[in-house]
Length: 224
Image 1 (cartoon, helix red, strand yellow):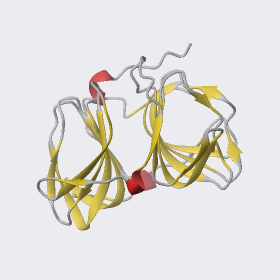
Image 2 (cartoon, rainbow, N blue to C red):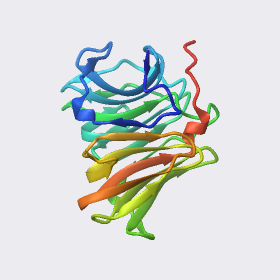
Image 3 (tube, one colour):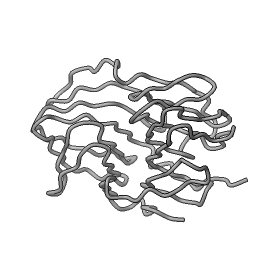
Image 4 (cartoon, rainbow, N blue to C red):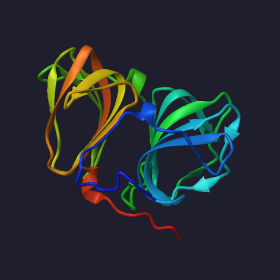
């Protein structure tokens, strides 16, 4: 299965218009943003857990990175409420569930095979450092392959976005305009390597999750 699998093109998705696709586990549905592969896939998705739903224990062969968007995600290591950012690198394993239901934004098979840096961050309490042109930023993760951050943009400010290694944005709060189209909560944008675009924040500003550099390392998953 290939969804937005041409990484030489801009991918811009109004996620509210996507259908929920059932996963192999009852009560767990997905909105697929990009995907290379079938059930073992390099994938970016929004995943909805119904109340009381769960997955059996499994190991992340290619790593898992996610943001809890709504509700509380749970596993044997603890509870992760809305606003939590989690990195589970290759070889980690868990038993995910959602006693009261939750929605997450999740990326699979997009880690360095040697990455073992497992952690979680409460983005709600992350300090944002004021920068130039009406942008405040809080760093979530940075290594030789990628940078992951939260950014808050002032109302009506215009920001130039792009990176030699590609860029990806999940809109968390507020809105921005791109190419005459308004993007709102949980909409998603991916830019090819070396592509720069201008985004204009809405009247209430915008808060985004942004990742850069990682698209220089796109690979298909190993299904074994």
